Structure formats: C-alpha cells, structure tokens
Image 1 (cartoon, rainbow, N blue to C red):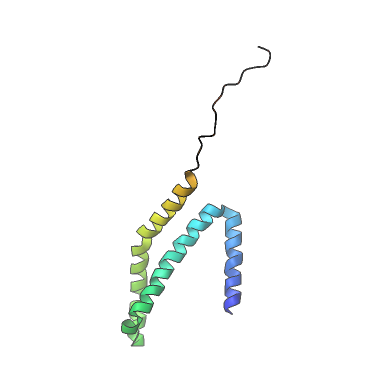
Image 2 (cartoon, helix red, strand yellow):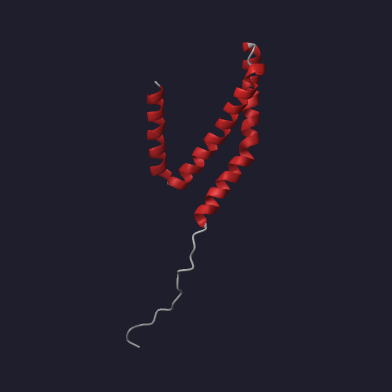
Length: 105
C-alpha cells in the first residue's frame, strides 16, 4: 500500500512539474515537506508526553500542528528565496551589447 501511495505521489509530482515548471514545483514541494518534517519530528519528541492518553493526543494534535505550520512559514520562505536567488544568479557577463548596422551602408 505504501508503494502505491508513493507511486501516486510521484505521478502527481511529475504532472505538477510539467504543468508549472520545475522551479515552482520545487517551491511547492518545499512548502509541503518542511512543515511536515517539523510536525513529525515534534510528534516523535513530544509524543511520549502528549500521547499517553488518546484524548490528550487528539485534543493537542491539531493545535500543535497548526502552531508548527505557522511557525515554519519563515523557514519555508527563507528556503524558497534561497532557491530562487540561486537560480536567478546566472552570470550574464558573456553577453556583448552591440548595435546593428545595415549591410547597404
């Protein structure tokens, strides 16, 4: 079942890259992956305390996820800006600016 899920995710990523371009697809993946990893890491570390009781776990899972998602927005913005700056810093020093002159002159 996991392989089927990963296969569907891979197909969706390929389609999304085709649709919007690889730079925007990479930014979208970063927007999803960074908060997800932070939420998973928090749940691993704090899970022993929060999830001893299923009621406490259910009540606290959504607010902590929202808090971590909101808190990760500056990090996501920083990573996306870094990616965009790396892509846009192409060295254009090889371009020579010239004027066109008609052949008849």
